[in-house]
Length: 79
Image (cartoon, rainbow, N blue to C red; front, top):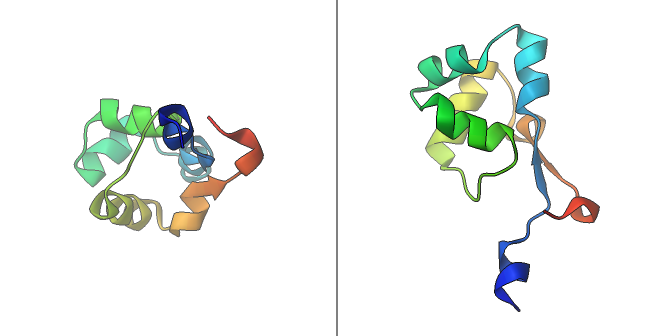
């Protein structure tokens, strides 16, 4: 497997939708979760290569959602 194939992934992040549904800003979420706005922005814009389970847990707790509400698997949309 080439380096490019290993870097490609098919996970999408639905953070924009969840924030809109909850009437919350990215800055408010960052403050409540305890991460930087920059790190959440990277996640929101599908540029993240990984997420810690502790961060995912905090995001789900604050947004009152399940990981599957935040993340999707779409192999046809590989990045």
